[in-house]
Structure formats: structure tokens, C-alpha cells
Length: 385
Image (cartoon, rainbow, N blue to C red; front, side, top):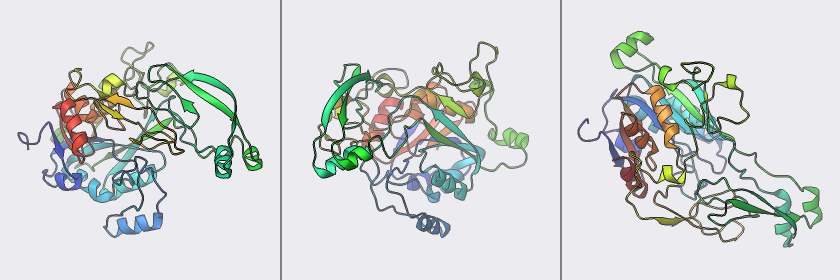
């Protein structure tokens, strides 16, 4: 494995690829799997299948219009991850807020002890919420009158994401124009101001651990796993020379409203993936791939669709890394350092465009990355290999 699979991006179904890896051979798993943000499942059917040792197939498409992102990975995949990790090896598994309970159950059923949940906090982000009042007017076929407009800062980090049918912007304007309309029908007037979702401000990163052999010191001595790296993951502080003890929160907004006693990381450690970040390799060079026109997803559109759900044309952006969900490299680096021993091997069975591998290479770790879709595996190789 050392010569053939180390620091490679492997293409294929991770359940099958993982079976080729030896037992107790990897130090940690840091991954950002599909969130399963689709139609609510029948939870009794899900748990019945899982308890019987069977896979659950979700009969719906995910938020990207794909089948592979329609549901969270089941226990079968996590059992293989569990098998290849050394005793005491940690898994850090990102999850959306809605399916976090199912992701956690799947990890528990695979054998992992759940140690904590790290919350990745951010003040940017828009609610993917349906405007009930506007929907009533649309259903009635009534045109709403524009009564004003306002400009708000464009915080899309070069991704060109416009949220909501009333938001429009040029690629480089730096501003988004929000058109304000008034309700027309009686139902729209009655339910003016009502929606269906809250603004997203955090994602969970489930922290699990394979049970240790013996006590902590015995396991660390034998396998190098089981503990977390407090020293190198401390939070910079003007008041404490060695930095504050790392907490179970990381954030993009070090100078925002959070209390200093919350021990959150600063924005230098964890930030949203910028255009430069997503299009660079592990040495900081622009990746050698052609730019492609893409239509990033939003609350009113489907990723890579030219039109919003209500038929409005969306603005394309050009990017060499066309993966729709890219985690920032600095965030992945902090997570890898937290749970991986120096020079260790980190696994990502849902490799995407390779942020985990980029973070590993930049910080002296080896990696094994698995990605099902060849088009994304190509981007990951350009960034990490």
C-alpha cells in the first residue's frame, strides 16, 4: 500500500475501494461526505434496513439534482472506514444540520465512539427559504409590484452565487440588488414575511473514535493514535502566550461577535474557500485545468442549472475547480492536525475536489483519497498530486 496507493486519488465507489486497504493501517479519517439534503426519509424504514444490515436506497434526488447526494452514507461504508483505521483512530465527518442525527447513528452503528461535535460557525451564508407570500402570488398568477430596491454587499467570494428570485448581480459588481415587492393577493398579504427555513450559520463536524486497545497511553504508544494534538491546534491569543485551549467550535469570523472565552479559532485558521483557494494546488500554484462555465447552486436553483426554480436565467461563473461544494483548505488542515500523528496517513473516502489531500500535503501528512466521479477526481489530482 505504501508505494501503490499512498498520496493517490483513487476513483471508484468508496465501499469497494476501501475493501482493498488492510485492516488497522490508517491513522485518521477527515471527510466531507454527501449531506443528504433532500426529501425527508421514512425514518422507520431507514433504521429497519440498517438494523438488518441492509443498505437504504433513498427514492429522491439531492439538492444538486444527483442521486449520490440524496442521502447520508450508511453504516456499511463507515464499517469499512472503521476497519482500516488503527485502534484509537479518529474520524472527523462533516454533516449538515438536518441529517446530522442520521450521520451520527450511521457512525455509531459502524462501531465508532462519538467523542464530540465540532461546530463550524460562519456569519456569511443565505437562507434557502421559500417566501410563502410570493409563492401564493405566483400560484395565483399575479405579478407583484416592485416598490423599492436596496443594495447589499456581495459576499460570494468569487463564486457568483445569487440567492433568491429577487437577487441579481454582475460578476464583479461587489453589490447585490435586492428588489422589494409588495404582496398582491389576500393570502399573500396574510402571510407576508413568512418563510420555511432559518439562515445557515454552522455545520457540524462529528468527531468519532475507533475503540482503543488498552488505556490511552498504551494505545498511543503502540499505534500513535487515540489522543488529539492540543499544542499545535491552540487558538492564537494576545492574553495567553501559548494560545487558548482549542474548543469544539471553529469559525471564519475571528473579529465578530463571539466571546473570547468561547475559544473559537481565528479567521486566519478557518475561512470560506475563496476562488484562489479552490483553484490552487498544494504549492499555491493555479491548477493546470481549463476553466469551465458553471452555475453554482442556491436556494432558488439547482447546481449547474442555467435557470432558477422560477425560470429566471442565472449568471455563469468560470472556474477550474468546478466541484459545487469545496471546503477551505485551512479548515481541513486544522482538522487533520488535530487528530493525525506527525507524518501519519489521513483517509478521505469522499474526496471531492481534494481539499483534504491539499491540506495533508501542505502540512507533511500522507493521504489516501477516494472519489467516485472521475470529473472531480481529475480536479483533486491536479490540486494534490
